Image 1 (cartoon, rainbow, N blue to C red):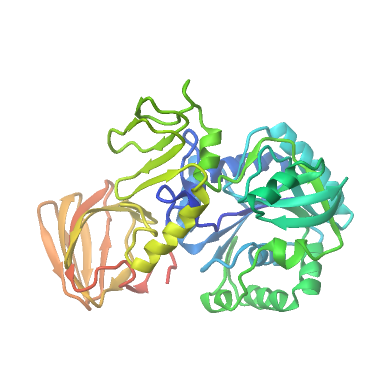
Image 2 (image 1 turned 60 degrees about the vertical axis):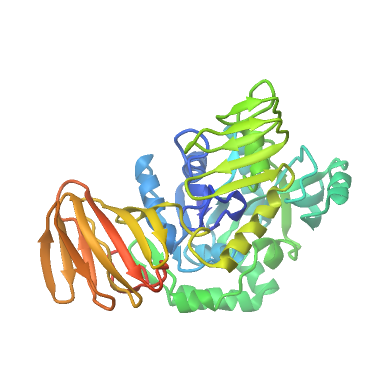
Length: 455
């Protein structure tokens, strides 16, 4: 059996902790491990092989986090753009023998009891061997409106109910054989592809064409941007699971959460005697969630509040409003800027950068390049850049000239010039970059050559 770990979500409902370039599955929300790392560890004893499906922007994050826990995967499938779960699973299925059983697991779920989880996987695998498509159900503990529900009779699925209102959710959980849709699946590659071809033939053809055009380099499969963009974006539930007759449900009795809201996060974290979560000064305050370590937070006469503080963004909401965070992210995107996409400290395949200050026509960054790494050979249309080396030695290419810039030295790059920054040394290279221009967005970039195969 192959564990297919889906890593492509953007986690918008956990903004500002989660951003497009550092989504919730790669954030260490519980101790020193991310949800992605916990998912890998949980499924490794149950499966012979592991295949991860991730966005191109997160590929290096996945590799770094694999190294941190000394885990290796058998294959990596890289999507240049996300197209939801049905295409992601289809592309993984095309990469495997038809008879191979797939255990499909999102990388952003929290499951506590590994023994009970293992029992559910064993039961699901037996159904999968009989040709069924299996969905994992979780017994609901409260009327959550952000989850999908499954009505069942034994192992037979009777109906799906997607994200009901509160009254509907209360009615659903009153029934003995109603489950939350756990978003975990088990089936053979062939059974899934056959069902996809039957119930979503256009999607099947799009995914098949994309896989045939993929660039395969050893264990790495890269779907081309044009082919991926041509695929319909749709969930596996809508495309297949709600249509197929060959479906079964197994109960996953382990404690489960998809970590899809700050209310979910609150439920999973330790609380003080007044039900408060997080480091803060609480005065006559109860049942609050406070996340943030960049400054002192004081809550006075607060009840059922969610306060999430990061260096560059602050979220304040009442409990029950967690599902609206996605609306806030949508509104921020409409305003423009990089806030929904990247943290003030952004991790990149070559190191990291931090925005220190920004204003009208300028932006100041601290850039750290790891030893032996280099940025892409690139150019910008709308900005000039000044580089000042603070630590280490920079190998700088500007058009057809390459030279070394040492600590306390600087250089200047005109808009339109091809340039590259490289750390050929053995210690971190640290520079200050001052950008000046009419447009300073991160998307003003043309990559000419890139070690990490980004576009």
